[in-house]
Length: 154
Image 1: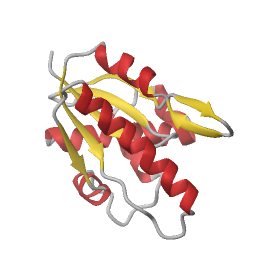
Image 2: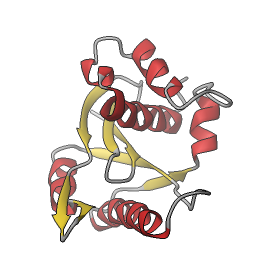
Image 3: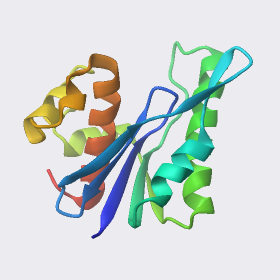
Image 4: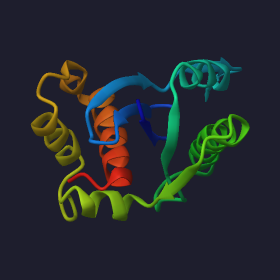
């Protein structure tokens, strides 16, 4: 089976696997560990989960600084994205960086509110109960739509 990985990076992100036709396989809310008082992505847990599957390509949201975001939170977010990218490189998984604008346009979400991605994912995967949770469901929805962007499924 061909598995495509979509990654919404960040400590509150998620990873989602779909088939090349867009069928849901599995998901993982981003695992974290405490380093002092800060949370960091648990790279070992991400790598262990990813190794279970024959991933043929990954699509990772390309992140950058956002206005109004503090320096410490930008660093933490960038670190999390770097951990995800490093795992893909270390496991020799080909990947593509995808801008939020690109995957949101593909999903018909430009100009929509933040929860629109979760609503769209629920329409596409009504049986996936994990989407019901507001925050974690949002991250899973984003990762799902990133993966679907990668395979060209609307």
